[in-house]
Length: 260
Image: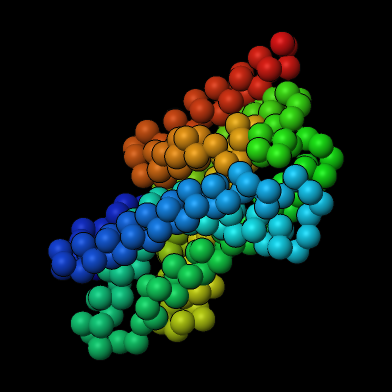
């Protein structure tokens, strides 16, 4: 792995500027499409078809699952760029050496598959809370206790060792790859590795995603703000410190709501 960079740091680009630009453009396009679809879903769910305005059926649950999946794609794709660029780097090196290597698309598919599974759990939680009357038809918290509880739990999780461990895997692509046996030459291996990376990212970011139950699931301003927090945590040098500070802020906000 020495040919692609030192552990824990992003490697120097070995792909051509054109290839790098194409990959980043593809990620930007995927993110843009997800956000456009999210705006469309938000408009659709503001009408009578919104789950919660009537008893849920299969269609309503599928719509909620789709909404969460699209939201996760829009929020998490930008922060996955360093990992995907690292995979593309090694794929390019393998191609130059005439060695077999799975496409980066397989790795990305595994990563997004993990977040699709998370979206299923989030949709089930939304269904449960709406059925219990804890969410309004507009997908905002119906009781201050829900918002306060989510904020406190999410804030405290940001301070845990598990959060720090998962964040360290997300922040260091090469370290993650080396820790898990290196890159995989076959599609199934690349898919599994991408899935594992996605699970670490869920471990890192699930509490931030849960904040949507406190501020409004379809509050797109907060969706964008949380996506920005994810990007800061995973991509900037201040990420770990920012995670702890944001955790303290969330916990304090939750305690303030309880005191009202």
